[in-house]
Each structure stands twice: as C-alpha cells, then as structure tokens.
Amino acid sequence: MSYVDDPIINITITLLIILGGIGFTVLSDIRYKKSFRKLSLHSKIMIVGTIVTNLIAWHLYLF
Image 1: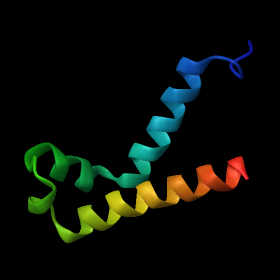
Image 2: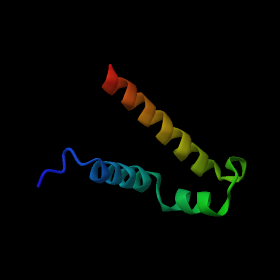
Image 3: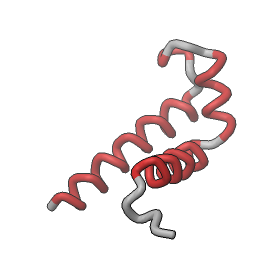
Image 4: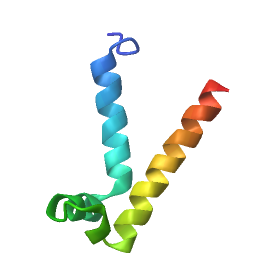
C-alpha cells in the first residue's frame, strides 16, 4: 500500500496534525466567535503562530 503519492491521505493527515496542534479551545473559540477581533488572546496567538510557523517551514523547505 503506497500512500506516499496519495494527495487525499497526505492533505488529511497534514490538516489533522495542524488542527490538533491548534487545540480544541481555539477551534471552539473560532466556531462561536466569527470575528478575529472577538477571539481570545490565546486563540489569536495560536492562529498567528501556526500560520507564521508553517510559512517559515514552507520557505525553508523551498530553500
């Protein structure tokens, strides 16, 4: 079974890892508070930190 070339499996596992890293409290905060300004400080830090970390890792991978 070769899952190396299967994009559905790779994207699913990647999204599960990212969402698990963000955490349940941030995901529930996003669900009930639709605006970024209404989110708690913890949620804002986790979202921005996740995006920045993924962008840095993506750039390093390309480099």
